[in-house]
Length: 285
Image (tube, rainbow, N blue to C red; front, side, top):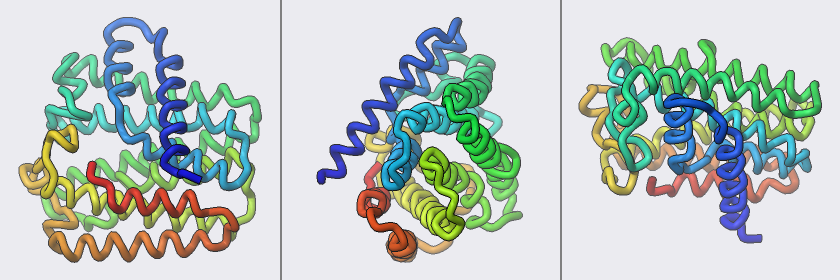
């Protein structure tokens, strides 16, 4: 099986769904929502959700609105992260960030609207038990016990107060863990041992994602990444590269990817998920 073809199919499916889901959003806020949500992006979190759900023979139809909800949450976080009161970045996904294109007030509202719409998407899933489980997973990962707490810690870290690993666990890792656990929830997985394995896989994959991000921030270009590079240096933020250097950071990413794949051995058909973890390790943008 060509796993890249599978990922391309997932990406096309989620992009088409996101377009339909937001095409009737009114006003300049609706324009700003679509501008950021449909600007491309790697769709990593939906891919992880789909791969997990399919590995467990879950209902793919339920996974699509769940993946859309996850991507809406991720996009809202990027809009807010780029604001002057946060990271103050002017470019995202190869073009002006939302607040540079629409103004700060509209960008703030567009992020709020995507956050709200995400849970409307989950509500479309007919299986109420799945809706309850998915809502809790996503809200827990995105809220002040997850991503938002990570953003707060990231701001504090500029003053040298907190550890890098803890920040990334929350700011980046929680949504990646949510993607995998939401895929499992769409498949109705209840076995704790297997859920723990998936959680460990996702946690390590999230760490690798951030390490590679930090490396690319100093080795790539704005043209390739589609966003401002060197912003971490400008903001005097701790990164894996600033603390450990590029070579040690790469070695750590390779080791963590190997560990992530190893824990999936309790599943008989995890090759696609392992392959995708390797692609995240060697990505160039």
